[in-house]
Image (tube, rainbow, N blue to C red; front, side):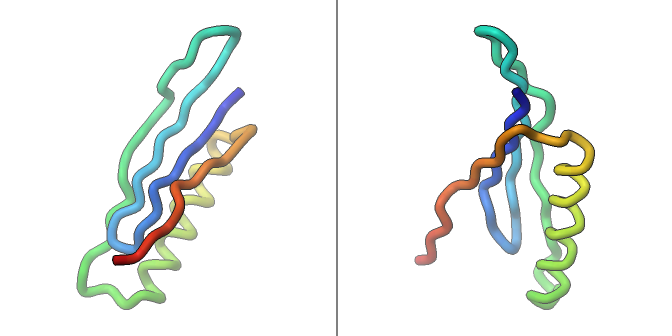
Length: 72
């Protein structure tokens, strides 16, 4: 089972992709999608959409999890 998890943010979105097979869990990939501070919110969201879509297409996960979004 492949699971991808996201820590969402418009400036930085973290992600991790895991593979669970039998009783073992292996890290496939992890990283951060970073957007420049001078980009408009629309440009940031478009970039994040494209990058997340690419990850989903590439790894075809069985489950997606996301940290709850909160604002301070």
